Length: 48
Image (cartoon, rainbow, N blue to C red; front, top):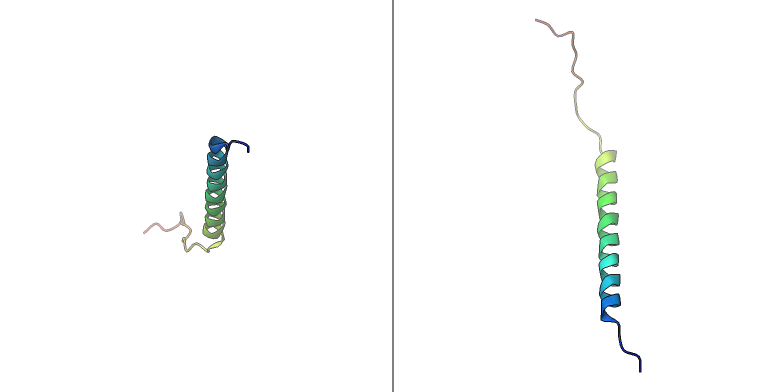
């Protein structure tokens, strides 16, 4: 029977974890970008 390569398994888990985290980050960034922003434009003609 072949000996298990635990380092390989560990590395694969780490890669999967990083990939999932990056996907979540990108999804969160898309949601933040798509939400409307209620920022009022600053007008330079408002001298009183």
